[in-house]
Amino acid sequence: MSFSPLAGMRVLDVTTSIAGPYCAEILGALGADVIKVERPDTGDDGRAWGPPFWNGEGTMFLSANASKRSLACSLRDPRGREALLRLVDDADVFLQSLRPGLAERLGLGPDELRDRNPRIVYCSIGAYGRVGPQRDEPGYDALMQAAGGLISMTGEPGRPGVRVGSSLIDQGTGTWAALGILAALLERETTGAGRLVDVSLYETALGYIGYHLAGYLADGTVPRGHGTGFPTIAPYEVIRTRDGELMVAAGNDRLYALLCGELGADDLAIDPRFRTNPDRVANRDALIALLQPYFAQDDTASWHERLTHAGVPAAPVADVADILASPQTEALEIMQDLPHPAIPDLRLPALPLSLDGGRVLHRSPPPLLGEHTAEILREAGYVDEEIAELAAAGIIRVPDAK
Image (cartoon, rainbow, N blue to C red):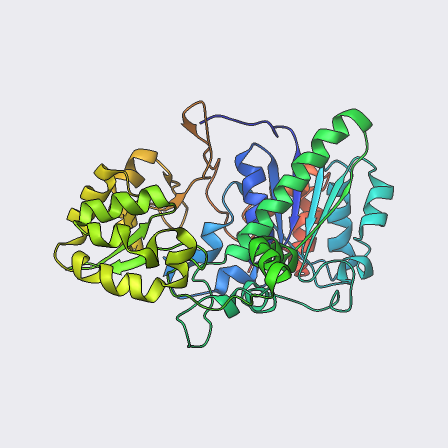
């Protein structure tokens, strides 16, 4: 879908890994001209994360860097920084996730850039936030799942905690960064001035466990792993069927009664141990043990159809192969073809966002390292001779320079 509210705006993406790139990918899909600033030798760390690779390209990098142009430029060299600062003068957003304090040491901190361009929205993505005793510590998604409590409450009862299987802290932080940037750009329409936007992985993790924090403050409950179960609702977990697994979510007393009716387990509907949701939570193990034999009598597809028809929420446990083969995925048209110089058959998820029934799509495939260096520097006023000198010195990388 052609939807470009940020058309004409330029974003300088000085980030690596997942959180910052994902934020910039969102902004790029919304129409911004995103310039991804990468090291000329190795590029974004995500380019080397794998396997799996797709025709030599890192799949994690591909997943977070569509709708961008790549400027391979060393910020360690004053000449590289000067090239970036020329771009700052006409930029709308500066997005950075450099190690704590490095942007300031390089002369790329918020005060310096906002003095140079008062309209710029400066967004910093950090690990633990801008204040506090851990403000200078680095961090990755897995570290924040640990420090932010998620690992302690994820996994099977009585066993060590586990990491959630996707980089949800990174992607959540990127989404919050994009929201903050959009709010600052909207405000700038009135004030004419940019803002400093701060987000961090740790704060995102805390935001994701809000009801657990409230529960601890209420009665001292420290949540632990419940497997697929939800600690405050029952039955709300995966139950084995004859041929697989089904997630069943009877989120209130009415749904529980419907579930029992479809199972032919009327005695469980009136059992005083399971009459209300708090009763069922208190007696979860006994309840699941009694439900299990009913589900073992039929296969997953049949139970899914029967419960859905009865109005009880349920979903088969799918893997990524199942998801890509799903008619629902196909109907949503969320998988987008993005032919790439190295991957002609590249397909990636578009944004999980539709407007007026149309999917918001990426505008271009993820770039090769340094693919757009020369054209971006020409836009900044460099002539070809200067570009060639910078490439020869290893300060920039262009496609024909190794």
